[in-house]
Length: 61
Image (tube, rainbow, N blue to C red; front, side, top):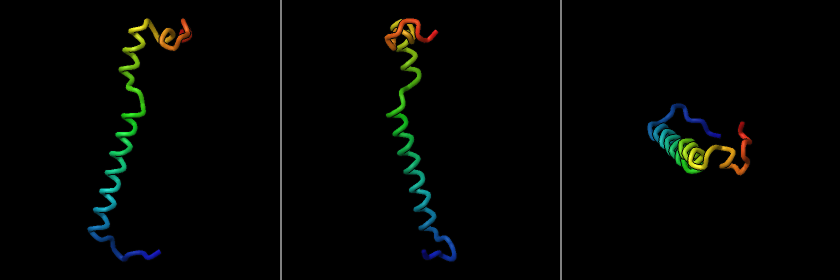
């Protein structure tokens, strides 16, 4: 591997851009894949509790 004697401006900006894009991708993936805790809580209240939501009456007590 060839190592540069100093880090150039273009290289540094490329690394920063790649890191930002990666962080943005991870953020979007987590928002899409992980359920929103507020929506889960609302659904639980709507059916009368977490046990009913899971189909197991009293399972969460």
